[in-house]
Amino acid sequence: MTATPEGDELTGTGEAAGGLVGAVVGEDGLLARLRLDARAMRFGSQDLADHIVSAVRAAQQDRLDRMDEPAAPSEEGVLPEEFMRRLDDMETQAAHDFARLTSSLDEALLRLKEG
Image (cartoon, rainbow, N blue to C red; front, side, top):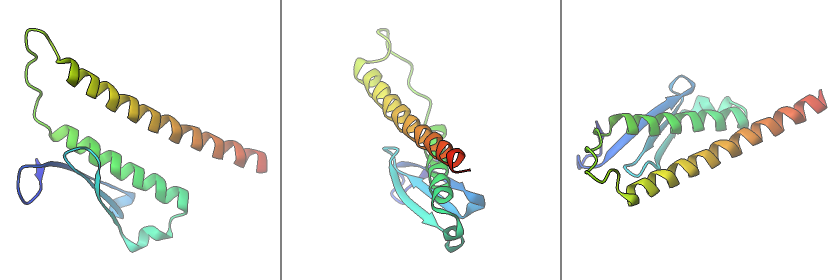
């Protein structure tokens, strides 16, 4: 488990571009730190953005992988609040992924039209 110096906050770490881009997410799953090696600045803006997204997603996945197994559900099952929080998280991530995919497709179509 990766933790802050206080030892009570679960974090995740991730890298991309052979370690030139690094990310740390906090207990809330949000980006806490981003590290860019000077050599990463040689990438084009879209490639750099893709590497940053990859590093952040790797850090988020690392955090999820390091979390303790969820407690066994009570006799009633998953609490409605927890279910709604998970559903909201999945909706937010899906919207982000869809926007990124749409942007990538738009760029590809633009390149095809120019080429």
